[in-house]
Image (cartoon, rainbow, N blue to C red; front, side, top):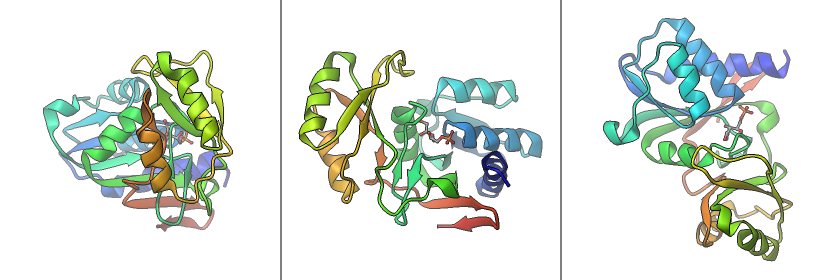
Length: 217
Ligand code: 5RP
């Protein structure tokens, strides 16, 4: 099984957490795209979806799934999304696709966050994957200097603008032994819109695709 097979496997497995006629939250990325494809092909009817990105919205709508604004729905039962890294406590790094802000909002609005990932994303300590930060453009250099002071090496994701009109800094080599503390620290920096650490509010479960099947964390 290659990585694409594993993504399809876990995308399909996530259907077990979707109730008929419900409104669900849907994340962003290639693993989530497999979930969307599985959902469309399953014939399982949902009322609507709250989307975490313009890319996801396009896919959902192309498949005939209605996309609604979170302001119209209130709380959601379930949010399905991928991750760039996860640890044994289901804490995540997200934002490789740049959709971290809306992802964090939809995750916060959901009772259950089901993370779907293949086993290559599992780590002992978060931080091999550079940590994405969405920043207000004016604050790019300021936030970069603050992140250097915190021990990281920021890299501006050039030629990329988020769905919210902001920029991304990818922070390399940050010490994330205490990801909750680091998330709080970064959240307090002026100019940071969202930090790609999902540690204060981790996933409620991780469905991990392995060559031996789905494992639940
Ligand atoms: C997008 C994300 C994605 O969930 C993350 O990048 C994983 O993507 P993929 O499933 O393509 O590996 O956080 O902002």
